[in-house]
Amino acid sequence: MIYGAAGYTGGMAAEHAASPGLNLVLAGREQDRAALKALAGRLGAGVRSFSVEDADAIATGLAGVSVLLNAAGPFAHTAEPLMSAAIRGEVHYLDFSAELDTYREALALDGPARAVGVMLLPGSGGSVAMLGSLAGHAVARVKNPRKISIALDVAGSMSRGSVISASQNLVTETLHLVDGELVTRSPEDLRDFDFGSGPQSSFPVTLPDLVTIHQATGVPDIETFVHVTAGSFPTADIKNMPTGPSFEEREASRYHAAVEVTDMGGTVVRSVLDTVNGYTFTAMAAAEAARRVLCGEVRPGFQTPAGLFGNGFAETIADTRIMNLEETTC
Image (cartoon, rainbow, N blue to C red; front, side):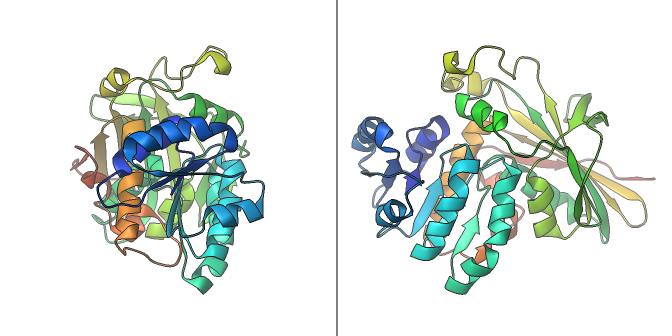
């Protein structure tokens, strides 16, 4: 089941998930039923509608479902009720949230999920799948990793849903991980990252990768940055925005990421990632993750894509590439 399939990225994920022999169900709110029926008719999928505010309705909606991909943001409203219902119904849960609180909720539900053999896999697409693979790849290059500095280069325009989610994100502090604990830092601590075409000034942000990369690698110090290409942040009223960038706009705006891993001896290794547009990657990665879960790649409790599928997961999506740069010593 894809809940939120009437949305921009959810609809693209449904396109990638549809395949012969797969019993695909598209779901969402009652007011989205007409759009869901139109998409389901084209893809040969079933349709269900229910509100995440009604626990009984969610339970009924999930009947007979084995894997749930939540594509309905803002995830601050949908992740916890759907994760809790998935645990009660013994349904594996995936999403592609970029909101830190989703991952805090998944950590809090780790014990109950493990007890019934349910997997919680938030971040099956988006930065968590991209940066998790990149970080894991670079960490494997050193013996005793101490610190990870990682940055995402965001290109092209944002979808309306992403803007709404960002505007309602409950985490207002700029955080980084120090000795395994989230602590505040100055949002003015800019630094340069080279994504492949020279240094680009990047600003610190609170990404969920602070939690997921630590979960997968155990590295105690992690900081996350973003470089945003001019024009990516919208200036128009949200209600006047298109649902998301067009196919041509996505094709013209590839995403990149860069990571630096410092070991206990001061050696620094650097790697970079080059991939398709973030929305394209997210839809494809989430659909692929769901397919792999349906095929039995499951581990109970809170998991990360790189931790579950391996550091090479991102490179299985489209023409994503990770490249190593020369190492240096501080």
